[in-house]
Image 1 (cartoon, rainbow, N blue to C red):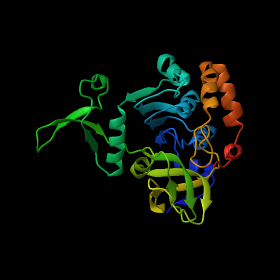
Image 2: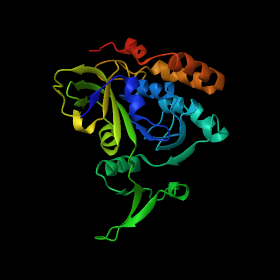
Image 3: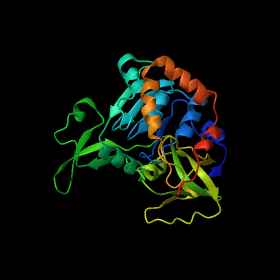
Image 4: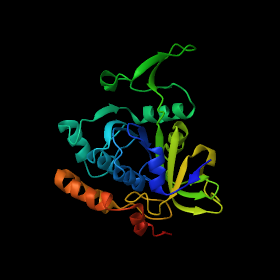
Length: 282
């Protein structure tokens, strides 16, 4: 059953040096506050997984928390490159970074396989693509029924998955709605999970047809962190800060300005600092 704890306690108890860590959320509900707590606690040698690593993973990589990254696209959405990611790959700063690149379809199927406790995922994909030439974890299998050759990738089974959601009830059930990526599958595939939420309520009352409720037995720890997805957005709570994504390009371009930003806004900050962004929108 999910424990409702502080974010500091959730990360300390569930994220361990050397872990494989997935932080998911597709443009919406990206777990920035939790990622900052991982940096603040000095977690290291993490193998990071994310379908679309953007600013949050740029911060984790530049802060030296990562030893590797499995992903299917990387960049600052609508702006350009991730400069700390690029520096790690091209110049091994602040340390070398192992990379494993996949397609979106392969990552989504691999999460589903992990959630179903299967060893691998099979899909129609990579036909005519070059990724199998550089990624030894892309293989093929032959269907025993039709003889069709399919792509195969290992299931994703993180040690810990971290997501942000809208609400949790006091029993530990969690509500996501709006744009939902692979958060459900990533949580179900993981050994442990941390969910930060905008608020804790008596009753979830999911109002929309695409609502996803993660049951308390599928979640390890819940922490209430209003504003915890900023600068991404939380539907019904606050919009995406496009200005921050644009500003990040300049901040991250230089190692010195990046480290100064991390010290001022992560190391010297706290999860409570995100609350100023949590102004409920209509």
